[in-house]
Image 1 (cartoon, rainbow, N blue to C red):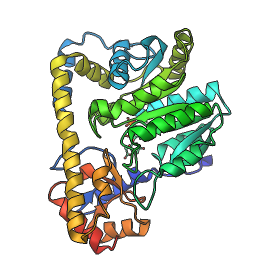
Image 2: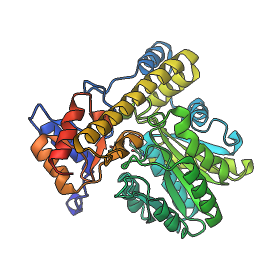
Image 3: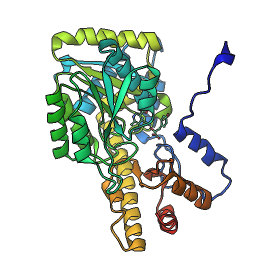
Image 4: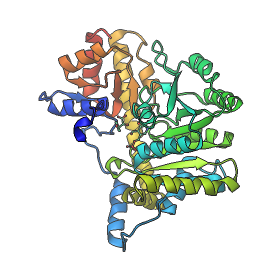
Amino acid sequence: MLENLIAQPADKILALMAAYKADPRDTKVDLGVGVYKDASGNTPVMRAVKEAERRILADQSSKSYTGLAGDPAFSDAMIDLVLDGAVARDRIAAVATPGGTGAIRQALELIKMAAPDATVWLSNPTWPNHPSIIKYLGMKMFEYRYFDSETRGVDFAGLIEDLGTVPAGDVVLIHGCCHNPTGANLTAEQLSEVIALLKSRGAIPLVDIAYQGFGDGLDDDAQATRAIASSFDEVLIAASCSKNFGIYRERTGILMAISATAEGQPLTQQTLAFLNRQNYSFPPDHGARVVTTILTDPELRADWEAELEETRNGMLALRQQLADELKRLTNSDRFSFLADHRGMFSRLGTTPEMVEKLRADHGIYMVGDSRMNIAGLNAKTVPILAKAIVDAGI
Ligand code: PLP
Ligand code: TYF
């Protein structure tokens, strides 16, 4: 049987991680996988997470099963964090999932059950796991223009033109904030236009929010998701806790599915629980419990928010430093987009050959599409990267 398997394509981001590890140069710089790193290159366990874990270790009296949807307290806390009352609670069905990826997978399975012929529209480019999972599930997908490779901002005219052709009942995947891989995001005004357009087309939004708190702050980063959630009858939201709580390996995420009415919610909730059962029965609990503990304890929550702010501001400072350094070296504003982008990533906008040259000549690792993880830099490596970019003639 197993000899019949056909080799599947590797995840390029994860392959790059392995190549970086194998590189013996001590000057190497890892701007690959989207994991936050502090100035010394460590991915710390956040203070509030450590404290929540200490409390759970001391107080937890059972590890019996939770429910198929996970602990309802986790759903309540996350719905509050992401939506903050933008939608009536009784319209929202929710299940805990293994990470944001699990939430996306369950969202797509839900769409497939409810509308097997629907096409899922993806920004070009998007996180590679989006098309990969859609293809695996045998669903239809289509791209909408998103990135302007000249300005390195959003190609808004192209996006509007493409989304203007979405047929009623199709699903449009939108990054809630901090677009991966480009770092380019819609303004609030542009988002309003997109919402009006998609409503007029009868489209259903699927929001993927994996970086709340990494861009402009916890509330600002959720504004787009809240605006979408409050504007449509039906919305799906996949949220990840991996980055903003720094609990990547705990696999913590949530899928929220907003029904048109409160009367419709129980069927959606029951279907989500069914889908969890088909795939893994009960979702992982530890990370979800840590998140719930933090969000429901004012002291822990304040400490978490403070550390998340430090993280966010650190990345913003690195963006500004890199943009300033490149301005100095090139005597131009060509790279000012780096300070305008938000989140962990920026797409530099160069060729795979140049990306390879940076790796071979300077040990600088970025994804082949020239996506850089800004958190992989520190104040010392920013000038090294800037000089390498200029030397390479980018
Ligand atoms: N969506 C996007 C756009 C991402 O970049 C990520 C990666 O972190 C995820 C979802 C989900 O991540 P995880 O499954 O680790 O929570
Ligand atoms: O885009 C990234 O780098 C992160 C981490 O299969 C990641 O989202 C990368 C690949 C993957 C899962 C997570």
